[in-house]
Picture 1 (cartoon, rainbow, N blue to C red):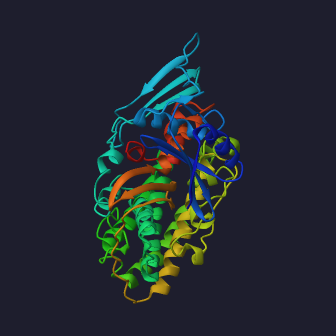
Picture 2 (picture 1 turned 60 degrees about the vertical axis):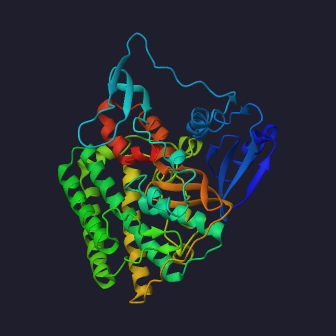
Picture 3 (picture 1 turned 90 degrees about the vertical axis):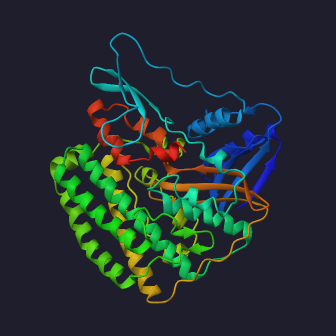
Length: 450
């Protein structure tokens, strides 16, 4: 990880130049500075500048920065010259506007989706989130950096492990701490369990969006089995506080033989589940060509995770910029080219099977060995930016610590990065396709509404 400070007048040109060779993954600001983040095999690094005037917007050239720059303006009062105007609500003869939300049936969090249609076809969709904005970053600034880990883990339930790992690695980098091999292996098991239950839930949700109740129920049954394993092996269905700065909780993976047996049984059941789904022609017919995201759109908007890899992307942080024990384990990256619902479902299915393989490999290496207790962490002063690969993609944590307290925290979730792409995926589809298209991404509201 490196941190390069530039004059504000040179920042845009350097960002656009660097984006031609390294993945651009986001941006954030403090009250007096702004940073644009990139991913390289060696890790995350940023190009930064002190704000002593208006900054030049990069969103016109890289739409993935549109939300980041809007957020910097709203949260930190950074003025951007040349920022493209938001799309207006489309009105006119022959067009109909339909508003869904922000309150929805079921238990999902609030979000308002405004559809403009010409006949049955959607010609414009606007998504408005942030109804449950909590101001997590500002609330945590000034707190003890170690104690804040518990709150980081609860920004979102479904991404708790990957975000906790990202935050822990940031503090460990500042403190110069390297975790024991046994702890790094345990972290892989926890992260892959989280990826597994999320992907199974996503497969079930895609079946629900297509009206295939049998596939939904079977997917939910398998997801429940994995979450019960999470509770048994980590003390919580969402694995809260299992990864901590310095290692892992002392209460994880006590029943490893039972876990390995369950994982091997699940492998056969999940294989059979996927085979059943892809052999159902009516379901496959609903999945194919729905909610297509081209490779060009995915790249321009900075898609991450399965969203990117289903649209001809190749980057998986576990492989592209390995961390922990992933360098030796070498996960197999699942990809597809079509960019539709079918591609996203197939990528997640193959990733679920790969998670089971990785867990089995790690448990074999761990055997009955004792997992090391967490190292004591004493971060004093430092700056660190870390990326991990969560279920929905890259989870970025940017940390500035001063005398052991958080001076600045910024979290870029995979959901925050991917939500604008859901809007583009609906172009040319019909409103009844939205539940199917949306659930093929199955992004988190809480991650965006942090």
